[in-house]
View (cartoon, rainbow, N blue to C red):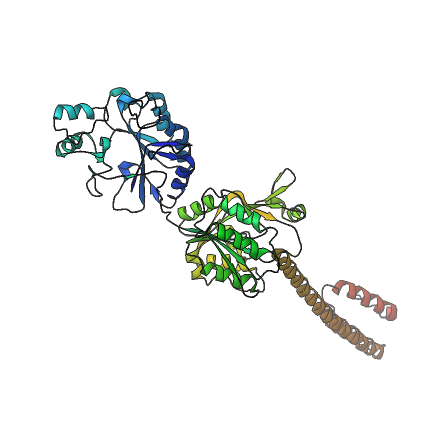
Length: 529
């Protein structure tokens, strides 16, 4: 697909002008596709896209080029030499606009643009058969050619029109030609283009769904939904799910769904299903390839969907794209301080406390099974979700941790965006994540206490046996007083005693027992006691 733009400006003045917001949204829809130069374009590859501008107007430099450079998209600029640095006053129908001058064209080249040829005067060549006239339109002035040594290899027919004579002359001078009204997708010299207007809807390669789940979080729900609606890359679906709340969640959810029918959907569970069943059912209602679940008490930064959907598009082997997050709320500082020092990031105006997580390296892959560093509102790939069977209940892991571990164990990767794109409210020990971590912590200490009790029971048994054998030893020693072989027998008993009094109290026991024996049998002069 080859796209054709003319003007990009904050105002959508006519059908030839695309406003900046729409232009940005159209560019974001290309994420997951391959945006290439014309020299690299393969019409048979449906994922390839070429972005072209005819004119070229200076508003392309002002408004389009920065966005293209931000997204690292290459672009083609078809220049009409007689208009360079002038305005379009000759076009009485169109609002006045100025063409880029040579310095601006050079700047566009430095930003990733490539200059191509659009004729000398923009003459409609469709009815022209005079070769001298045609050749005059096809000659590129040396001053312009010097602006881009890699450019001027392609020609765009003015008004999209051409005839066989024109095409023959173009073949002798250029490596390809573009139309917009009478081309095709197979002949390199008559490739067609899609004229893009403000109403052109470019279908994204992958659809994104954001699921906002609430259970008695009606007071926070509007903030969560508004943060989703303010995304620079609008999600294709927004699902508000009420897990049978007893507050005003239902009222608020229905309000948003009625306000944006076809984009926002509201569902209320007939009974409280809990996290896992609610999440799994909600995912099954979406038709999106990329899914994010947002707790109703949290918020997304406005570039969350844009950045994470781009990461999943660029990394087809990644099941999940995760981020750092910014804690906020009455307990934010407390939770922030409980994080390891290496994860404590910036503190912004004593309000947002950024927590950073590691990149997904081979070492991090191994660590994920032990401790989670991928938060529950990370964006995941639906294909991977279905493959591992969705959310499941585990005793030792939260539902999201379990999901991500099973995805990685299935061979998928993860990818991190190093920005705090999730605003994670910390307001109560009754939050689901706090309750779970407290439950896990309690389980840990219960297990530890049981282990200690078992060890104490074993030690008590050892001590009792030691005391019994010491009694036996004392009895035998009393019977051997005055016996000629007392020394050799005592040596054997001492060896036996050493086996009894093992670490960690062996030395102490030996000292104690030695002292007792010296006191009682001092007259024997036995050197080993």
